[in-house]
Amino acid sequence: MIFPSLVIQGTAFHTPERGRIDVIENGAIAVAPDGTIETVLHPEAGEYQALIDAAGSRGVLMRLDPESYLIPGLIDLHIHAPQWPQLGKALDAPLEEWLQTYTFPLEAKFADLEFARVVYDDLVRTLLAHGTTTAVYFGSVDFQANVILAQTCLRHGQRALVGKVAMDHVDQCPDYYRDESAVSALEETRRFIETVRQMKQGDHPLVRPAITPRFIPSCTDTLLQSLGALAAQTGCHVQTHCSESDWEVAHVRERLGQTDAEALDGFGLLTDRTILAHSNYITGSDMRLLANRGSAVAHCPLSNAYFANAVFPVRDALDKGVDVGLGTDISGGFSPSIFDAVRCALVASRHACSGTDPLLTPDDRGTASEPLSAADSFWLATAGGGRSLSSPIGLFRSGYHFDALCIRSNSPQSAFRVNASLDSPVDVFEKLVLTSDRSCIEHVWVDGKRRVLEGEVVAKP
Ligand SMILES: [Zn+2]
Image (cartoon, rainbow, N blue to C red; front, side, top):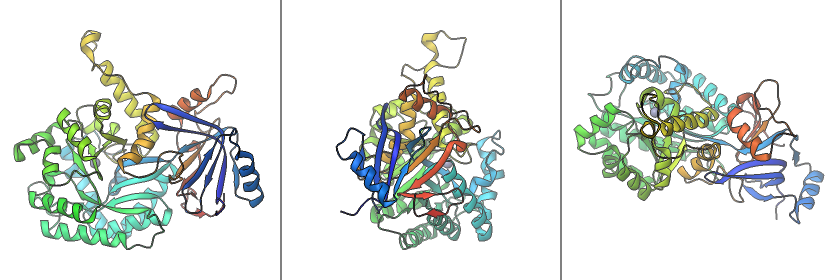
């Protein structure tokens, strides 16, 4: 047996099932040289002390400070990488104006590869520093800028899916920013998949390509059909937007006479590797279709407050068997932090359940379902995201990739306070989920390797 390359001793939190917190108090997590978790031991385990002693003598033991905690790395299922420079800008504009006046001109600038290099380097480093160990990126239409984004993720060691955005519809896309034709969009997508798959990566590729039709309105039927066929040929992930807003749902209904989910299924785009952003307006039968196909939803609660006109019925979708994780939707949302997405999901769910109109009676005001708990929302950001990607990430379990964060309490920069005489382990977990931010994140590991803020790989703990 090859000895672990890293053993971390300390207290860890994760959520093996939705809503259930597992506290591993003063545990030992052994990471194999290939970056996967070899074993997770509680102190009562027979081999515990021998592992700690051997790791200590080999110089691979990392003891967490008693005020620090280990959690799985955060998974962001929906990011528009080229919108990073406009984070927090113009969010009061209606969607159509936001896209045409701000977003499309900005995304078109990524044909300038030096601009792309600078922006993407900053984006990937910033997201890692915020604890995003896995990122699912929409790129831009321009082929080469997407290659730069994939290379940037590899260089900084962020697990990622990257997609070249395909959009060819002349009525919905500006002349200066669209694929020339359905054929050229398909060929560029195919070339991008091959390019990423040929990048020099280890045994478990960190960065993978995704087929990325922007959304139904911006693509012709011919393009959507051919990308569905490409998904079947290549086994690639698929990402797109689904049933996001009143306007978009009505547009698809008028053009195709179907819901988004039904139409995407008809085009062959609903697979067990599909991630659908938003999906606020999916019906009960859409939910059953997604569950049957194994397709997942990227719930983006902050962005939905601006552009979706409704709250995604997250608990209903989960209860119907749909895989759901969280997304920031940079820059439809103004925060790059999945901790903020966790909290926005909680707030949105509480508003939906209690209702928002004080003139109505309590019985008529909200939906009948239960709001999310802190443990539910944390599960979405970790294990739920991993399930959505069909990847062994988001949990501390043997065979899973060791993607993790070390979170420090009681630092002067943050509000995450722990008082040993007042707080039970579950209290500490809830405080961590509700009050942590970037300033609490001491260390970030992806695939067993520690990443520092500047994105350098440090070989040893
Ligand atoms: Zn989006």
